[in-house]
Image (tube, rainbow, N blue to C red; front, top):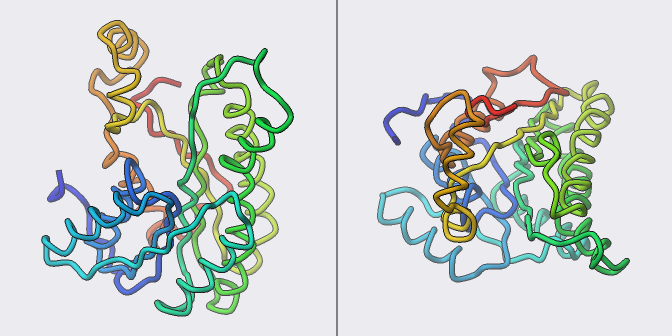
Length: 256
């Protein structure tokens, strides 16, 4: 599928920061931005997965991305990691707020501490990452922020109320920050993935019954893979989408 990607000249040498970039959809972002010739940094807490990703990109003949280990729930650590990425690579021109965890949980079991931890895992870091990169983008005359929402709450999915609440809030965050940052040439968009076939999703939830239901719900009868989402992210990061902001971009095979 690599040869099917468009090449965006505006992404060459652009500094891109991806959160949660060591595995899953995030690793696809890191890989494809590297193939575009961007200068890529990514944050994660999975050092082993990060090392494996860097090794794979080296083997492909690509410059290794910069990995900064960071627990995104720790906002001072996040701010420090973003500053370090900018110090090593230059001012960040693209932020991909990808990191999240869709751990299932029953509403009866949710405590105040768990709720707060889920907000920290799935929502809070997206705002503070935007806050940290905005001055760099403003000084450069513009930039692109790509937040990540979720199809889950749009289709009334239960079984994880803290997650769906956080993901719904990201759309509001996108709209508000697009308005605040637009005068500085900074675009803020939100990508809403459908059920993306990462290895984690396949291992945990892709049963035969679930796959049958998926095919009934999607207009397109093909499973959506990480590369399909990254195609949208690359376009939103590039100058080709220069007049697109404050929008929700659904990549779900036609489920919604």
